Amino acid sequence: MHTVIDNVRLIDPESGLEAAGALLIHGETIADVLTGAPPALPDGVTRIDGSGACLAPGIVDLGVKAGEPGERHKESFKTAGRAAAAGGVTTMVIRADTKPAIDTPETLEYVTRRAADAGQVRIAPMAALTRGREGREMVEIGFLRDAGAVAFSDGDQVLTDARVFGRCLTYARSLGALVIAHVQDPSLSRGAAMTSGKFASLRGVPAVSPMAERMGLERDLALVEMTGARYHADQISTAHALPALRRAREAGLDVTAGVSVHHLTLNEFDVGDYRTFFKIKPPLRSEDDRLAMVEAVADGTIDVISSMHTPQDEESKRLPFEEAASGAVGLETLLPATLRLYHAGQLSLSAIFRALSLNPARRLGLPGGRLAPGAPADLVLFDPDAPFVLDRFALHSKSKNTPFDGQRMQGRVRGTWVGGARVFGP
Image (tube, rainbow, N blue to C red; front, side):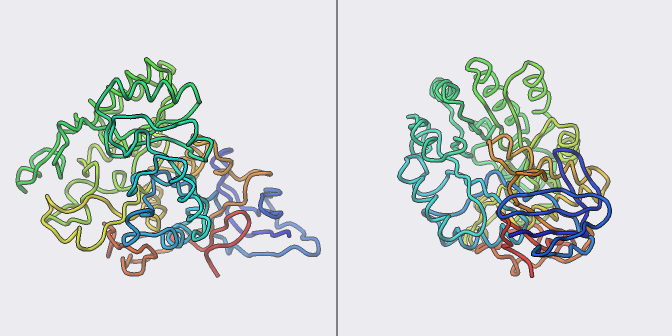
């Protein structure tokens, strides 16, 4: 089957292309990228009119919590898949912080099978780095990698034993496996709900210094230098951490970093009067830190933007701020929230999709993230200027804990394709 999507503005983060044109799809892959005048279509080609919207590679969202196994009441692969398709996410990179953790080939195969049966988009599963994410015993990295794990991470459960972490990194390096870490000093951040400063003091909420992130990153980078492992910091959120990251790059270490869309578009003052939908991990930072994160994405110091989709039920959020669960859903809000930076003139569309699609795909060894002949036809068609007011109850996710509820946003997804098949849109 041949399909052409024409009358679109092509956004290719690999080549930097931002131009009017059309895209020809053959089966599950991109056959050709056409710029300029509308192409003459041979017989048998299905035409889809893009109505002048933008066509970009589908989003590869690194760090999604799907809720299966163990917390299906918060999210399932079916509801997460629907939310992803509605948000232009064509690949969900699933975290291992499930109950039980994804720490054996059997659990990984169960997750992969469940996702294939219920989901609408591609799944790339991570596995835990240590058994039960308890930081004591390394998982069978080789067997899990053979079973399909794209990376290894204990998530926000920081591995505090440097000797164990060093052994994990050494073994991962021997297999070429990617290790993803959450950078915090847990002795400082344990029990904290906000970033330390005047605002947290006025609210009387336990807080953590931004230096805890720098300390955690410095420790990890020293171990990476010692072992030569491939390493990715899942969420950088403070300006204090950026110099260490830049030094690691200059030293030639195989290091990348990500940031959540919430730390790019929100700051500590958004918490207001203890609004628990704004309680995330790490906590929201100062406006200076937020601007530093935007600049770091623009100059390439931070490679990846992700939603860090963390569904929580109403009961876990309807608690005093200090006791409420951390996390926010983000599969459907990732693109329109990131587009705030485009409308503010801080990031171009190609730079946004470099961080949303190309860089995460490259880091994980996935073939997507680009518009090029032979690449998978994983695509998102969106109108970056379409305004709307977000209603959290209209989200496809089972949980509705979004900090953007009631906010004015711009950027509507008009269609999503996975392997050439349309999974969202008319």
